[in-house]
Each structure stands twice: as C-alpha cells, then as structure tokens.
Length: 452
Image 1 (spheres, rainbow, N blue to C red):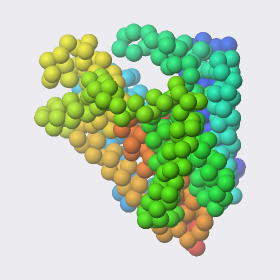
Image 2: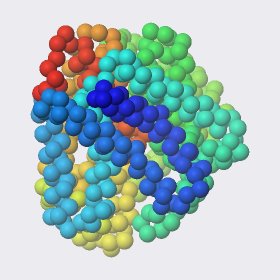
Image 3: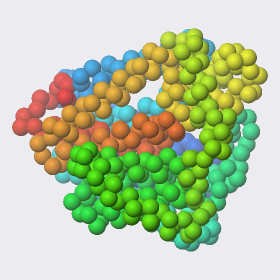
Image 4: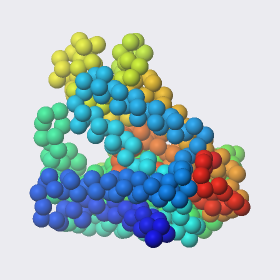
C-alpha cells in the first residue's frame, strides 16, 4: 500500500509536468463560470501540497522522521516564511492579498520535499525529462503553427480570447489590446509564460542532447526563434544565456569563448538574413536604443531600480518590509516621495517586474536575506552535486537544475519568474530530481536525516 501511494504521488507530479503548459487552453473549453475556472487553476498547487504532505506522513510513519534538504537550507526557508507571515500582522495588511503573494512565490517549493520523501528510483526519474521534452515539442509545434498560420490559428489556440480582461490599478484592460496579435502564446495565456516555458524545454533539451550536435543545434535554433516571436526580450536573452552557460559547463570558459568568436560571423549573417522576413519582430534590438532607455528610466523597470534602491537604503524599508499587500506598499511609497497615492499605486503596480526588488520591499531586509540565502545555498548545493556526481544520470539532472537556478537570477530581475507557473514548477521539480538522483547513486543511504 505504501509503495502504491508513493507511485501515485509521483505520477501526479509527473502528470502536472505535462498538464501545466496546456492548462489554460484546456480550461477555456469548459462551460463554467469565471469563478470556477479560477478555482480549477488552483488545483495543481493544491495537489503538490497534498502529495508533499502525504509523502511526509508516509515517511514519518515508516522512519519516525521526515527528510529535509539539509545544510541549514530549510532553516532559511522557514525563517523567510515566519518573516513573511509576521509582516502581514505588523502592517495590518489585507490577509487574502498578502497570503496570495506569499503563496505565489513558494507554492511549488514543496516539490523538492515531496520528491525527497517519495524517493523515486532512477527509472521513474528518467520519465520526468522525457515528459518535459514532449511538452516542449507540443508547444514548439503550436508556436510554429501560430507563426505560419497567422490569425486564424492564433485565434484557435489563444487563451486571451477566453479569459477576456484583467484588472490593473482599478481599470479593466483588454488583453487583446495589451498584447499585440503577433505575439506567440502557444497554449498559454501570456506570451511571457510561453517564452519562459520554452526556456525550460531548451535547458532540458541541450543537456539531454549535448552529444548529438545536429539535434542540439536544431533545438537551440527553434527555441531562439520561438522566444523571439513571443516578443519577450528576456526570453530571447535567456535562450542565448542557456546555451552559453551549458557550453561553459561542458567545455570550460576558454573553449566557449573561442567557439563563440568563431560563430559570431555566422550568427550575424543569419540575423541579417532574417531581418527582412521578421521585420516586425526586430523590436528586440530596441533595447539598445536611446528612446528605449529613456522610456525604461521614466516608466519602466530601470526607473524602479533608480528610484527604489536609494529609497530602500534611506530608511524607506523596515527590517520586515510592508508585506505583499500592494495597497500597503503604495501608501508607504506615496508617503516617502510625497506622491498622490494613485500615482504610487501605478508605480508599485509594476514592481513585480523587478521581482528581486519587490521581495525587498515586501519582506524587508530580514525576509529578503532569508530568501536569498535559501536560494543561494540551494544553488551551491546543486553545484556541489553536479561537480561530485559519479554517474551520468545524476550529473545531467544536477546540470538541468543548476542551469534553471542560474537562469532564474536574471529572469527575476525583469519578470516575476518565481510566480510564473510554467517556469517555477520545473525549477523546483528538477532541484528535487537532482537531489534524489544523487542519493540513489550513493552505495548506501540513511532513510532519515539530511539529504546532503
């Protein structure tokens, strides 16, 4: 019975890895009210928590303890949660809004603990990257179909039509106006979610095909094209960064630099040849223009950094922050800068775009430090697992997890990658896979205590 329960739990997590990229598209066809559809979108994270709690209960019953990540990593996570909850009550924040912000950040972290205590074998673990590659292939096929088929195909797959609009600073914005019709979204509601999932698929693809040059190159070219067509500058940058980081991992810095220098003329030629065919998408290069920098400074992410960072270190942020209740944060910013609160609300409304900075305001220096230490020590652990891996399986899984963790650093500087379901789920899932694969490779392992 215990083995069946473990297998069921693992299969649920595996099924979610396939389901999440398709979720919005599948739900759009259900004849249900908007409220019920929103409730159904919470099911995946509820299942993750149920599987994690069930795995902990089984392990506790069998061994009298539960497994943790170890190396004090768990303590920093617990410390962050304590600070985040305390900030709600200290600031008198709206509980629903503040808890929702915390939930969106940590909802898939239990995947690590679930996998550690489910203890799947290598045969089961091998199914996870295969499922991700299949999901990546489906999204790539849909993206190419949207690109070549034009508006009729996009209208069929578009979830934007089904979900209508969203509320932003008290105003309803039509998503069809918010995102241009040529952005690729695959089967997802947002082009940024699509672009970030393509990055996940690319990470798994390059690691799995590093000894197959033709497949490797074809996957990279396709991922760069799809992220380019999603109109996410950060996704395009992320795709290039994935390849560079992977090449550094397998070849070293010096050989990667030589290879990059040799390939630059070819890349430039391809980019120029594609320029006329994809003229409307050449917006990616706008990031180097003076107009873009001026816009970013006045109204966008760069402006947030320029204004909020001095504010943070000039007594503007308390040790425990303001909670993730946007109203509380906006009031604090309005008071400090002597702004009308409606202007502060607009300013704070885009705060999640620079998510590391948002975490600093939400949870203060203590909460931010706890989360950064949790994330940093987790990255250091995965790096050690990669360097010390004694078999191919655990080395590949550790490399996938490490690349996703490294990728999350710049992605969260431009967008809230920790909150994007189609990225965050796989980030924490593969961290758990890397830890379990390393444990499976050990000659003997204790069933209790720390993992590493």
